[in-house]
Length: 194
Image 1 (tube, helix red, strand yellow):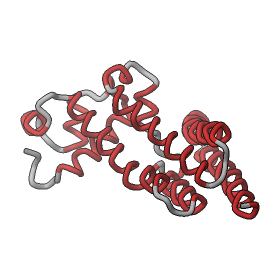
Image 2 (cartoon, one colour; image 1 turned 90 degrees about the vertical axis):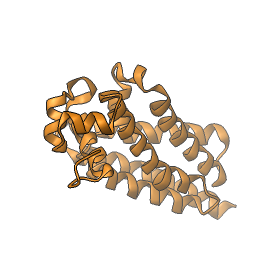
Image 3 (tube, helix red, strand yellow; image 1 turned 180 degrees about the vertical axis):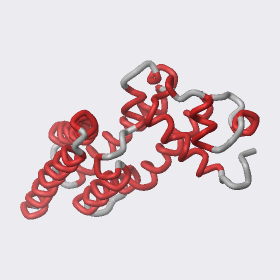
Image 4 (tube, one colour; image 1 turned 90 degrees about the horizontal axis):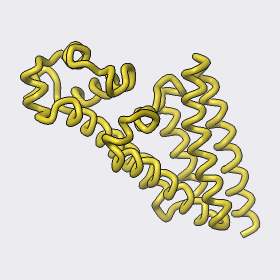
């Protein structure tokens, strides 16, 4: 089991940062042991399947956080505008205002996608569906809601890539703010008309 100085959640958080920084293939065992402070024996005791188990645990943790903090909020039968406001605030917080990459997105871009397709596809698919459903609840027609949900995912993920590529986190913040303003205006107009 992990050293008493680290709990399992802390180990997973540290593993996540190694994968974010080096990617799946670049996350060597020496980098992992250095980041976690755990020896090889402790790591393999906690994650018998090695690096793949570690990555699965990290992706599962990310999926759980988004499920509890973002997706479920959008899926509830509450006010769609409030749900989107919560989502955008959570996204800014989670991605450290554009200074933290999306590990699901990074894994989707290389052959890691083939190792973890269920988790990656599930993450993006549920996020897209939750937004589209929430937008339809707010009065948008299905095709419009789906297009806007897709656009929003592109703005968030593209904003993260651009922020990283330009070393300008404000590129992410601008993309998110633009999309948030657009959705807020649309939902407000539907509510007034409705």
